[in-house]
Length: 125
Image 1 (cartoon, rainbow, N blue to C red):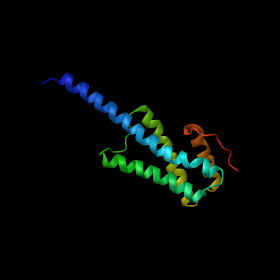
Image 2: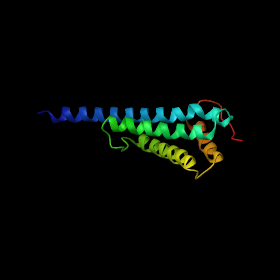
Image 3: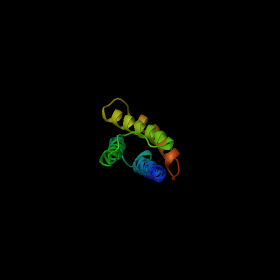
Image 4: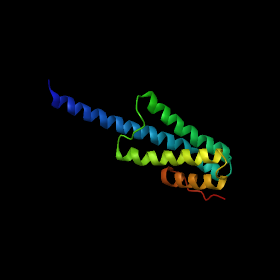
């Protein structure tokens, strides 16, 4: 049995799993960031923005579960992005539970657009 070959294959599979996970995380963040400028400009309300935040994170978590993963990050980058997803969930669900206001959502979205967006940064009003 060639364990060296299996080990190399396992490493490649782990690397692919990690990069695929990061891609799924970035896609979830991108869903939120895509709506961000419209929200910051007043084109959509905080309720819609908060639902988008929560739904994006839930969809990501559902994908991970369907792929058989337990939610653990597969790389250092995934660990950092997990914190971003946690903030999106906490902020969005906090707003929906009336624990914070639209200005709080705007601060989070302003940060997300600045950090992850390619569009011009908007100042919340």
